[in-house]
Length: 97
Figure 1 (cartoon, one colour):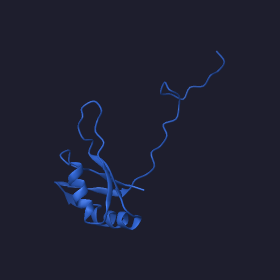
Figure 2 (tube, rainbow, N blue to C red):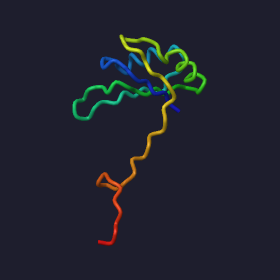
Figure 3 (cartoon, helix red, strand yellow):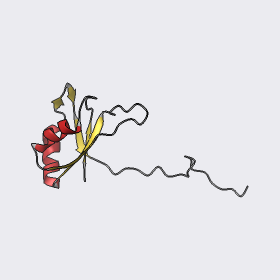
Figure 4 (cartoon, rainbow, N blue to C red):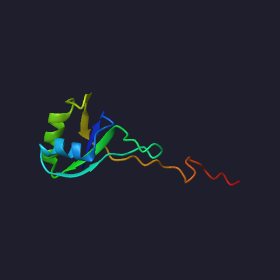
């Protein structure tokens, strides 16, 4: 399982996030998605920790905390939803044309 971290400053780096979450246990991975068009950080990230207990402690301590001038949103990450549809981006049916 991983942790969703939202409302991050666009200046945050992987190392910054690693440092903050390391106070609550072993950080296995940090991911900060970037916009594919601009290359700019998108304002959220994901942190994977060594155990669920460590994740719970980090969530409890950091959700709502102010960091780098913003109030962080920290919770369990939800599984990514499947977009479904076909390769053309829609839910098209073949009606026998």
